[in-house]
Image (cartoon, rainbow, N blue to C red; front, side):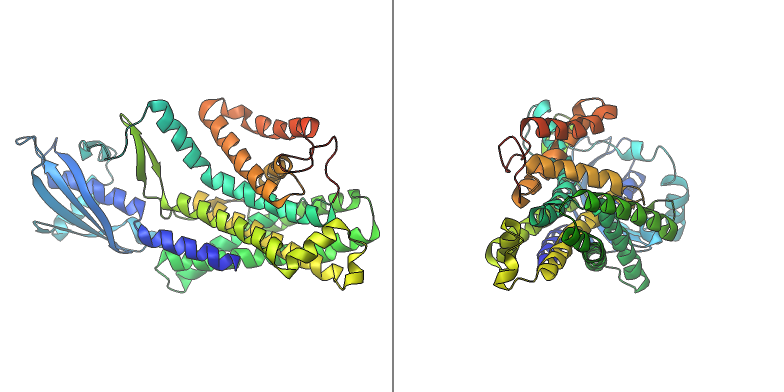
Length: 444
C-alpha cells in the first residue's frame, strides 16, 4: 500500500510540472540569438509539449523600444527525452516568425550554445511575481526547502531503525547499506526503462521505485531471518547482533564495490524546474517538483506505517511482542513470521530512502551507506529509538540541523555537530524526545 501511495503522490506532482529544467535552460539560451543585443526578456508562460519539446511565450524589450511590448514564442525540439543522451541536443527551433533553417540551427548548436558567454547575453529578466520579504527570511526559507530531501532520507531510515529496535530491542546497523542497495536498484530501474523504450520519466521513476523497494525489502528480510532472528533467540545480550550487523554492513558494502564498481553511478536531474515562492531583491527562494514529491512521499510512507501499527493485525502483534516477547506465543503469534514481516517493512522504508537518494541527488556510491546509516541512527536516538513517530521526527530535525549548519556555519564541522547531538541526547534525555524521559532508555 505504501508503494501505491508514494507513486500516486509522485504522479500527481510530476504531471503538474513535466518540464525538464535543463531543456528549458537550453531553450532560454536561444532567445538572445533571435533578437538584437541588449534585448531584455520577460517570460509569460513555459510549457512542455512532450518529452522532447519546450515552448516559451515571452515579451521582448529591444534597445530601440525599452518597453515590453513585443510578444513572441519559441518552441525548442530536442533529440531525445529526459532519460536519453540526446536530451540536450537541439534538433529544431520554431518561432512566431517561422522555423529556423538548418544552417541557423547548426550555427546555434556549434557557435552559440557552446560559447561560454552565451548565458551572459540572455539579457535582463523581470523578477517573479511573488511576495517580497526580508533577506534573512528568504534565505532561511530556502534552507528549509533544501532540507526536505535530506530530512526525508534520515526520517525513513530512522523509522526502519525504530521498527526493529521497538520490536526486539536490538539495532540493525546495516540499514544504511540496505538503502544503498535500493539506490542502485533505482538506477537499474531507470536503465531498464530506457532499454525498454520508456521515454516518459514518470514511468521510469515508477519502475525504479518498485525495484528499489523490492531489493531493499529482500535484503532486509534475509538479514532478519538468517542473521538477527537466530541470534535474538539464542542470546539475551545485544552485542552479538550489533557485531553481526556491522559485519553484514561491511559485507554488503564490499559486495556493492565488486559488483557495481568503485565509481559513482549517475542519473540525469529530473523535475528540477524551480518554482519561485519568495524573493528579497535579487534573491529568490524556490522549490522544485522533485523536492515537493519526496517530502509528500516520505509523509505518506510515515503515515502508512503509523496507520499499519495502529489499526492492523500486524500492528497489534507488533505492539504485543514489543511489550512481552516471551508470552506472545501463548496467543498464537508466530515470532519468526512477525520478525520477518517487520524486517520487510523496515526494508521498504530503507529502499524508499535509497530511491530518494538516487532520483534527487542523482549519484550513488558503494560507500555512502555508512554515513547515511550513522546519521539516521542519530535521528532515531534524538526522536526516541523505540518510538516510530519519534524516529521520524528525529530524522526531520537532524536534516534541518544539518542544512542550517551548512548554510550559516563552517561546513567542515557539520558532521561533528550532527554526531555530537547524539552524545548530548544520551546525557540529557536518553529516551529521546518522544521516548522515555527517565535516566535510562525505555526497555521494550
